[in-house]
Amino acid sequence: MPTARRPRRLRQSEAIRELVREVRLHPSNLIAPLFVQEGDGPPAPVGSMPGVFRLSLRDLAREAAGLAALGIRGVALFPVTPTELKDPQGSEALNPDCLVLRAVAAIRKAAPGLVLFTDIALDPYTSHGHDGVLTPDGSDVDNDPTVSILARMAVLHARAGVDFVAPSDMMDGRVLAIRESLDRQGFHRTGILAYSAKFASAFYGPFREAVGSAQAAGTTGLDKRTYQLNPANPREALADALLDEQEGADALMVKPAGPYLDILFQLRQATRLPIAAYQVSGEYAQIHAAARLGWLDYTRARNESLLAIRRAGADWILTYFAREIAEAGGC
Ligand code: PBG
Image (tube, rainbow, N blue to C red; front, side, top):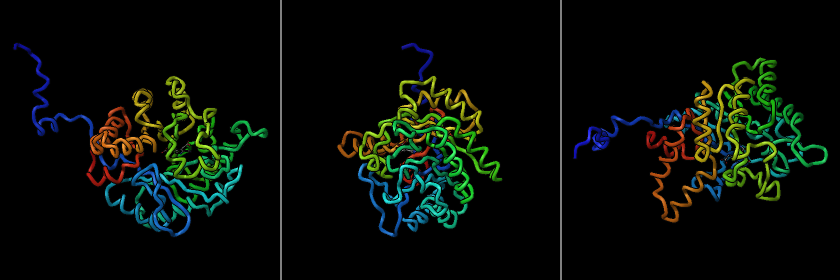
């Protein structure tokens, strides 16, 4: 059969396929999310996230050192706040001795070189589970009062020694307010990783179980649609993300990752900043669930899901698969 082009020539052996390979994921592209809990109890499994545990401070420090030894450069910390410390204002967020800041200190000691990211949002601390404080009539999250709390929270985290604060709340104007507060207090070196295109997603379900924000709301249907993005709106997502760049963000994030590769790809063309993508709890859970049922090959589905995110333009990937991928040397 006469044909000038035979693309299969480049696919005929493992060695040739490796030579022409375009995208790969290295452990240094990964940021591992870690959950920390009070007390020195054993690791507490998160039911809907096989292999993910809430860790005591001691186990957390050990895990962080282990991840660093595997070549992972960054971890993102999420505290499980005891219910009795939650209130409608999320006051515990401004406690300089709160769990997540003790976790920062513990990791700093155990793994000094690791890049530390902490979430700036009130949902682990509020009794209603929202990312901010509510308006007087309780019908919505109140933007500006929330932003001033977040700016104070960011300064506390910078003082505790985090490398990047990561506002995940989706309030308007929070990146600028945080940047100004950090600079005013002399924290010029503390970076901002902005959760810039964060969608109101059903894929956060397992995470809310892990940190208890769904239970706090007394419902699994915690509705964040007045601040998180509509999954139907790519233009709005791009515009909001670029606003974070203008406001002084050092890196931008798209979240969730797999269902939003178009956003990731477009944002890659629109900015020169590093881009992070968060493969969220539900993306992790669905691969595990299907593999458990024997419906998907676990390793191949896992690697393919991550490669797709990298291919679309992510420099950093936050993923609960981080340890496994690092153990495999990448994918
Ligand atoms: C909230 C926050 C959420 C996640 C990270 N930070 C969930 C939410 O908005 O309710 C989700 C991460 C995941 O699902 O893995 N500030």
